[in-house]
Length: 327
Image (cartoon, rainbow, N blue to C red):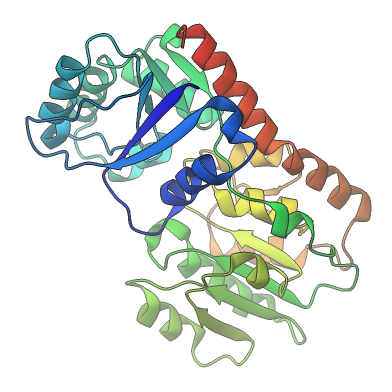
């Protein structure tokens, strides 16, 4: 059986950890081989030499972590190395990088140490090639997945939309500071905005809600499919989003989904998400007001069918990659 070792430098709850848990526990992904998850410390010139046929990095690329990557390559000269890029995207580059030339140089040097780079959305792959200079032959696009059974089993909403859900960490990335004023401006009487999550912006977001009884803060949930069952539509006004697992989950649940036209959320538009072109209060107010009064059954079915194939698409992608690496 093929041995696949996944290196991770952040084991806190989040999208990467949920993806790796799925890779390790799903009967479908077991077709690829045996998955081992190995936590590592990256800020050192020392790396493991696992007993594996292929090593997959999920670590965050940074100048301080380059010694670790060099050591990883040196310690495993005969083992294929793959990096899966979860963190960086065109919008990250545009919004947060002060020195693009230096940032791109770090990415180029780091990624050159790997035999293949797995990208998670079309915009990311295009950016890595055109802006960073990663050869297209080195990259393969394989979107991540998590367990979707709980979402696919949810009854699709078939009544007038009464609840709009937002899921994620309360920080500037998610754009909830745009969503809350937009919801208030929309002037709904019998619709709630239900926010599931927590984070450093909670107090600021609660201040924006101004005690509106129709804006409900539920806090962090460890049962996201149950939370999804409580809403009739989902909004993702993200400023950046390399992929967006919440989008995949919302589509699997048959919920109408509003997304920013940014990064990985663009790919979800092809699967049925409704785009909002600009991240302004007025644009999102208009989008919320224009949500269908009743859910579109045909659109729901198409979205759920596409989402239901996500796990098999992931397995097919990794199967091809491993074969290409002669693993």
